Length: 555
Image (tube, rainbow, N blue to C red; front, side, top):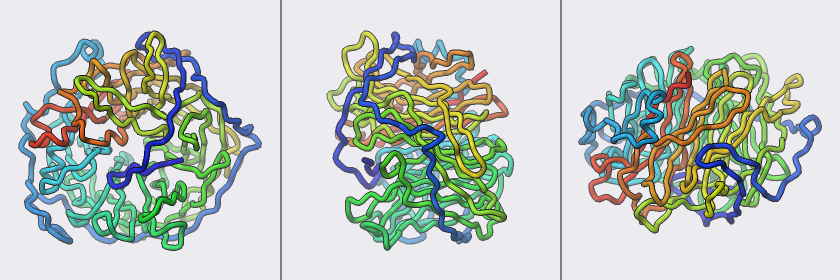
């Protein structure tokens, strides 16, 4: 079972079950949770191949970020400030005083600054307040771009705001009042271009059509002009449709952008599974027609596929585009991971082929609601879908939220399960995959929410998440993985302590964090949600979320 995770939709919570893990102290080592196991077919005999449908998208417009208060392209909701009250003031961008844990990790923490906040979001949207942020992050050419639901900023790598906070719809040349959600972005260092994707729903979210918007920068500077493309995801003849593609996930290799969505009915409860779109990158870069191949009706392990996460490849030449997804169709627990590959990716010469296989992994379970300091209200930990994937050094890395038990702790906690998978190909399809590393990240007495990780070629990695618990307000934290023969994530490090409890009337947290590897500096850029200083919160205190941007050295 899967549920809507956009800012618009929400269904009843899934059933929950505890995954038992013995975690040593606050470190990240763990034994396998005890769950009801699911049989996974042998990789050599469990390969599925899926047909694709070809089409194309066309450049629709070109726009630049607005340097003054804009007039909305469709309808106005009020005056849009060019900069928030705490805009580029250096003092407002400094990290809070380091905790003991943060001080211990100071040698690896290169940058830590406040990202886009609920105040930014409200000021960029004429006072309207949204939750959760759903932060994306991309970095390159001296810039850091952070898009969230409803707003974005561009920073220097030192954390100085160059433009924003602006309405996120500016990048996509949409009207400021249009409903968009779940942004993600990527900087293509080889071609020196920025890509951003987002979900669009007509009628301010109450219409009968949908699409995925793609914005491509025209230069290496994300403060300049963008070209826009649209992929129609309405699927009017589909089950329960008109439909929309929830949470567009983004992967990139040398040939294509890969966008994966979960298709839901706009008006009803129907779920039609994951949809994958391979969009020709050469056409996007040239601001011309870009061929698209769409893969639908995807199943794995006897159930509809959902949240099939495409990998980023950091411009590494690869023999396929790879994906990972978790299963857990009963929203309880599982011990299987789907491994997917798209081959024959040069759409100018060949037709892409999608295939998948299923492997047995460590167990994971649907997370529990997370406690926070100073409140009886809890945080929504989401579900156990795969959060983000990366292909590097011949391996696919992924991570997800899981419920677990920590050694010496009597309560059920939330932590992260991580996977390092080595795929193999036979011709134009995947032939198998093997777990090359896996484990858990947890902290005694605390909850870790919405993990995201990125690794380097040597196998060093950094993971970011929100850390919260009875003794911690929701805080931005990370953990590091060394490249030794036994790979275990270290103790969580709080990079920015939360300033207070999260609004007890708010329903949402997350829905994801983000991580990306910078090969030039052998570092990982990270972003996650936390409770920022009051100067970054909405003035009425009703939406007091913020994001924290970190750069962590791997070597």
